[in-house]
Image (cartoon, rainbow, N blue to C red; front, side, top):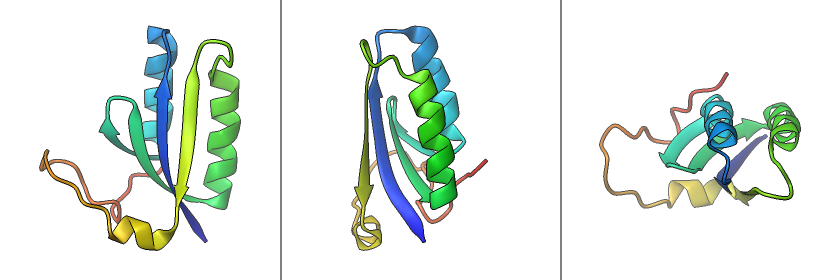
Length: 93
């Protein structure tokens, strides 16, 4: 079973922001500067969650993961940058 997730974050630290972006690029696709779409197997989610928890400063940062039902992904409307791939072609680590 796959989990569909939107991950959004904000941090005042340039270093953590760069590390979060690198981490999330390995699990999904960037949609905006601090927003990623991910399609994850449960084992990927467990790994990603552990890495996020080690990276995020709970006193300074905010990170949210929104899980979507699979049918919601098929009803997603996108407009803009043509280089953005559809979610059915994710890049996983």
